[in-house]
Length: 237
Image (cartoon, rainbow, N blue to C red; front, top):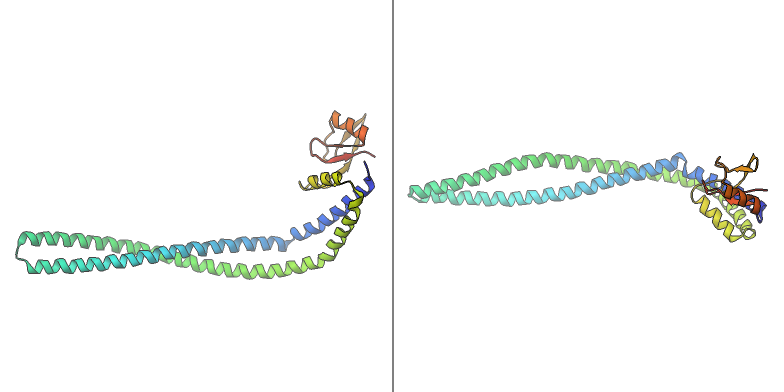
């Protein structure tokens, strides 16, 4: 393989860089930061949902008040009609209408009672969401500050490794670097691996599986091949 030593040196430095980045990404503070972010978003969603629920409750109470006032007005009107008429038939009709209005008021009272329970739950959920959001925001800021400090400490090492990679890149064919990038993008490290001699012209890949006859022939003829199982690039010195 062309410029094998440079390629392996590049891979070694890149793996070292990945370890440093993983140390940051997989640190306890990174996990805590993500958890705090998730909890904060959940709390924020709760507050948003309860605010919408509160708007609906206010609308319900406003409508209920208007309905109550209309019923009171209607009761006064019917009561006055009952008092001012001597017609028994009309009086019975007015009384029947009066009872219907009262039934509506009883139904409204029941709905208000049920809505009061829901209102209490909405208020409690809103306050809980606000409190959880406040705690998670404070935790997020504390952990973020600590994590940023850790990243700052690692930054010189990261810059140094990236500079070394940039220095080696020109000596490696672009097509090979593209292959390397494609393999490592799948989280496969190392990407370029030496063939394991299994004897009798058989070879195994880093993944532990034996190379196919086609891949073996390519390895012997060209000094490199792709493992058909894990897709790593296998070389033979």
